[in-house]
Length: 132
Image (tube, rainbow, N blue to C red; front, side):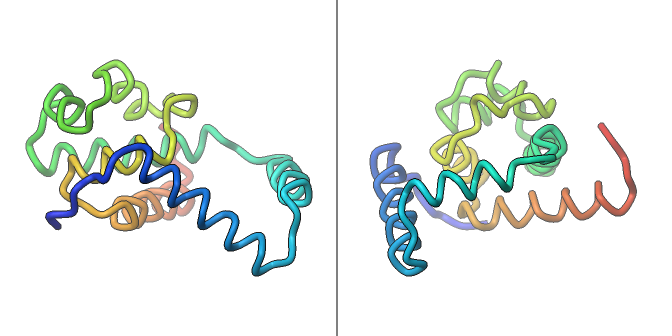
């Protein structure tokens, strides 16, 4: 666990945009080309599978820390109903980069550490073919 502090939505959004622009420049891509590639990559993409894996990772981490949904939601500054939807695997419309960073900070993790738990949940689901 870490003492990383959430820098705020504006800082997260600026950093995310700066990284996307840096990648576009490094790859020599236009924004239109990126949009085309993203649309192409989403064909046959099972969004629900990844939403369930993220929700499972968040719920497991919350429970390991003996936190209630209410405590985690308050700490992350998100509505409890949004956290509930995320944990149930239905938070796609609510799960932005900012929300992921807020949840990570509330769990005393850096965002990449939370995403490592998400990747592990994907591996477990993929290997066992369990659909929650």
